[in-house]
Image (cartoon, rainbow, N blue to C red; front, top):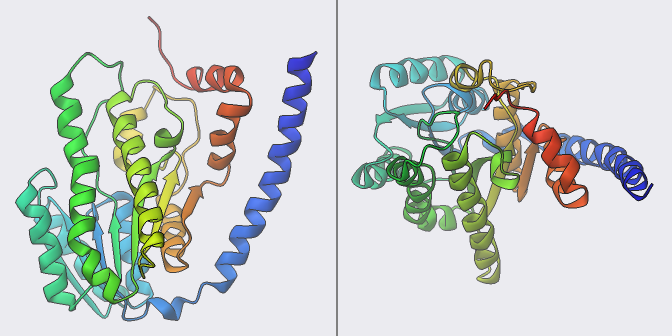
Length: 293
């Protein structure tokens, strides 16, 4: 009986939060002035495909000045050409390997030189990992942490002086996996958990120092990028949401200097249910994956 009451109360809370959350985001969207991004100086990582590519196109439509980076030079060149055709005031690319420490500084220096400073640093890149039971490969976990976490904090530190000067924004693309661990992705989960913890702490520190820089941490559910869909095919039972919509939500969150984004909105609810009704949440999570021992 007690468990039943908890579930009923939780459902009521979920309904209330759903209405409140969507209403709040609608309000933020209404006050978002696209003109605020015209001429904005933006560096987006992981932008040759997926969410990063879509963010580049949205920033272009808003008339921003953009630098994009990823490993594939040929693909980046095509994205830059499309950005210019969509209305970007300026668009540049630089091919780089996010596992190479010298490349990280080189990318930020390139953006600062080409754009004359930065208003937005959008960190979105990730390393490749399998969707499978962890097999004890510690070296892969170390490599993934280098790309998905250490590169973020190095680039953020490098860009902070310019962001501070321009009252800029640091936008971190994270995942629901960093808030609520899921199976078959242990190395990936660890990197996103590290991101959430580090940049959550850094946000406090910047606020205590009266810094001009805002930090937005974006928690995303499953997004329908080609890479994600190929990795989870036949392995998960959950809907995927459009990359272009996720990208726009990320941009609005950074432009309005919101501390957090949960997309789709109910990812926020899941972060609460793991504490409210942990056994039920574990049950749902584990049965969202196809696994036969």
